[in-house]
Length: 402
Image 1 (cartoon, rainbow, N blue to C red):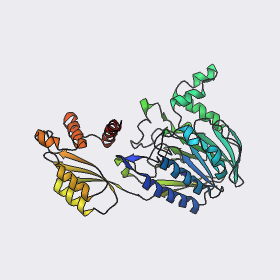
Image 2 (cartoon, rainbow, N blue to C red):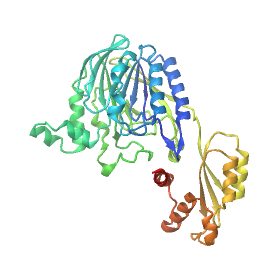
Image 3 (cartoon, rainbow, N blue to C red):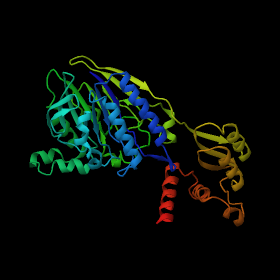
């Protein structure tokens, strides 16, 4: 059986208020091509399809159009679980209509997927959190674990016996109990798969998921998965990697770099070939960088303007950091943005810790975002990170429009 594993598309995500949909569309075109060239029997999408509970209409349309193409007239089965960024109900609302295209969706842990025909393939049996499928005559057992938040896991044990409730009194124990129960659904002679959106200890995070380590409660040990699993397809971490200690457990990572911290690693999807009872064959397929995120460090505004002119025609997102004695003048900022499109931020790096030598008149001429960055630098003796600045500007924009 030929399988393609991907995750963390974050359709509709912005970068400093700039849409990434054009890049995401290019990725999805490449992804459809890869799946066709690999003649995939099964596609696993391990959560965070969207970036928010209420994705823009264009992101949803892009998702649905892509699913139809991946189906190849129902020959390929596509299995999708929700991540922490997805609205489970909204994601799975199209499930009944998607069946003719071979699309299976699970929004919450222990979802019961209806049995029956899915394109050219079938789900022969299912129960809370698992499906038994017949894919081109091959038997496959899939354990589906959409993002298991504390709340969603708690709901699973509302009617538990006292003994079960005691076993499930903390997050890790609940997850062990969940996988222990689900692992019993693996049948001899079938291909055994796990699809999950969660964070495993010792995986190398990237700072993209703000909530994955709330007090450490969402961290899970690598031995939590059933030993019988032939391949474990994970989402939640944007850096592609193998789970330490598990040769067959992988995060596919995100298809794009979604912030400055992510430009240090490549993006990929994973191709897996499985035969029952044999080790899986894994190939990590690299993706191109559709529009690079670059950090330009310049010694002066003049150097920054010259660099903007030199690279004026290049398609890239740019963070500018400029060493300066005082504030960057508004006319210099306008010149940079006029020459180079897609400058995301212009951050002054002061040679002294007291950039307060400018007059009140000069300060009034500065853009709001520069004023905020300068104040933060002076107040806390450190630079404001891009994510905090973006959040503040978003709040300001909402106030202006309300």
